[in-house]
Length: 181
Image 1: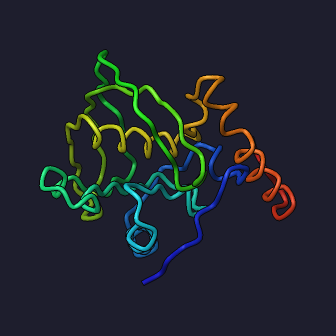
Image 2: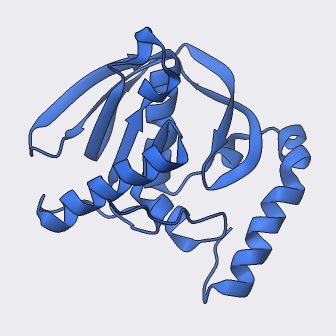
């Protein structure tokens, strides 16, 4: 079991597009396990490799933590995912992020999506998701593109969270050789 530290706003891994995984090997499977262990420990709904400082196209989504029968099967690990369909129907909802823990705001996402990618067994899997599961998949996928939920905020939501956003950035500016907004 390897629980990893979650990187916060300002860390360059959160803003650079993640690298495609060339081969599913022991190193990649260890990253997957670290994501699972870290997510279980922290208790979130999803976690992407850039959030633990690894710039690889890997994420996990697991809604079973909600202890609701409708979400028990809503879990997946995706490697090199592709968003192949996004509905025109959009939905606003309040979102948070483990890399910006005190920050919350309204984000518009497609209501229904279709995503495909590799799973750890090196098999391609395609899933359709809507509602909360679709939202979590889109949020984690954004992390692989270098996007954060604050990129979608209205000016009002950004302003409400600005003190926390600036706090993370200032901490990382002191502690890291490179930071990115």
